[in-house]
Image 1 (cartoon, helix red, strand yellow):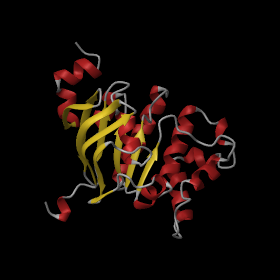
Image 2: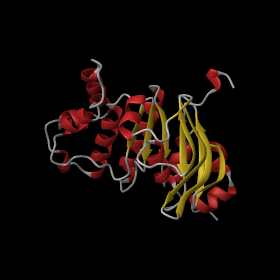
Image 3: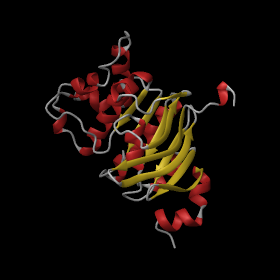
Length: 241
């Protein structure tokens, strides 16, 4: 494999356990630069655990996580951010008493360059509501607005790889469409994205490639179009007979 063939992210034989319970049971997958890759599956499939392990919040019991060809499993989470991996977590986890602008600037806490003001402007262009309410406490935002803020905050670290965990959870259909359109825009701007999403239809329509997780194991994989056409996926995740 040449350097140009090396995936941006590569997960090999990953096992993650909570005590004696294995939440992830030896999965392997790759994310190539410039792509959107999705992980779909029901609650408890191991999707969030996988993201948390990639971002350094959990340590694997076995296996490896490599970013740009170098292993990062075992690296502290704050250092992984500086390498170019950022996560917008499930549940958003914005800081409600801080202003929108303060939340965004927290996303750039580890940066030492002089491009922060420029990237703040880019976040405002991506989500105009954030500019309009920059001085408003973030806790006054709706769920959809908080999701925009969480994504904008993650982008402020200038990631090479953006991990998105359930970005459409709890949102109205209209707001979900806006979030998915934003993910498409980010890809067009060159951001590589690993997306965890329970809305399989939306995720697979958007994704270049996808993996189906069931109780900690990958049971199917393929392009977004291939998985959308799969009888197994259509029956289990798209509600079709």
